Image (cartoon, rainbow, N blue to C red; front, top):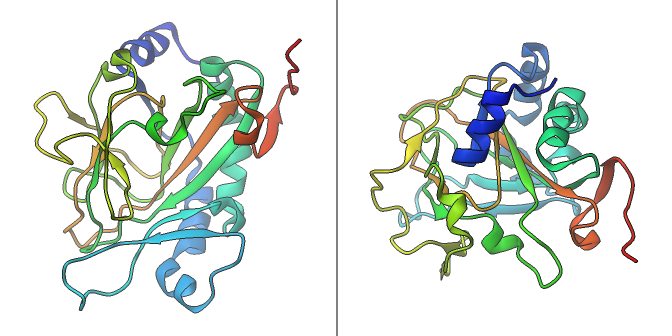
Length: 247
């Protein structure tokens, strides 16, 4: 699947792009089953290959809920299929070129009633290194409907053109965020999505999401892809193309 010129222009101008119905319903239903009760499953047995951060609350009486689960393709065959699908990789190739590697995959459950804020941030604040450039790209696909009521992702269009901004450091599970944490931003655009929709966005666009106080989960999964030679240590697996050697 290729992108139309107007879609390329939208991505270039705004830093993100929503693609509707990219993941088939049958696969979304499979993933929904595979990630059902993920909180309880991980409490019982966390595989050594999985990295988990948990929601943090002021009220100790709230149940333990997964905030994010790294390497999610290892716990869901459906997620692994989407990660490698031509539907996704064709768009990634259009946006970053033919040499594509997996950087990481993470499940973001944002559970009903208990999903907390993701503060404003740029992903490159976490990913920047001495030997890389902001060439990575995210593909976030939705297992549940994402609405303003259950904490859909929000973007500040065009903010990627400002470059990497200074971030504050916190002591909670979300360690880097822009000043103001998640204060109201008039420029922010909430992007609602349906199950199977995908949002592609770069590492410099400012984004975040509100709490989920609704009775509906907002499960999503984000794949981060990298240009293979853009710091090989940040490339877990080559998915397309070849490893490029400088010199």
